[in-house]
Amino acid sequence: MEYVHKISFFVIIIITIVASISIFYFKNIAIFLAIIYVWYMYLKEEKRYKIKKHIYEIIENY
Image (tube, rainbow, N blue to C red; front, side):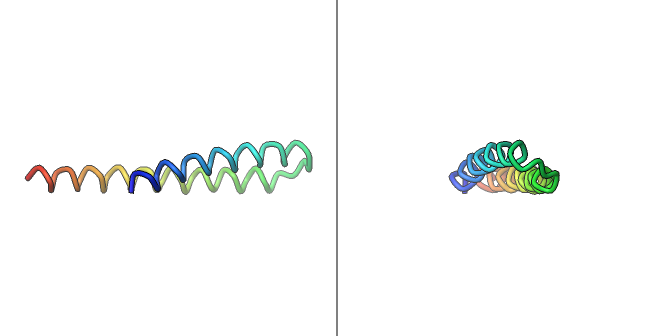
């Protein structure tokens, strides 16, 4: 599960870089809004991932 988390982070970084270049080239605000939404989803899932990881650690140590 940790590998998926790291891979998704790197994919988001790559998408952000490509989108930044696209925003500059196409001058389209919709791309910017889409990237903000993708980052929101990533941060939301990261929080959920940390909570699950903490719960699994508590269960293992119990």
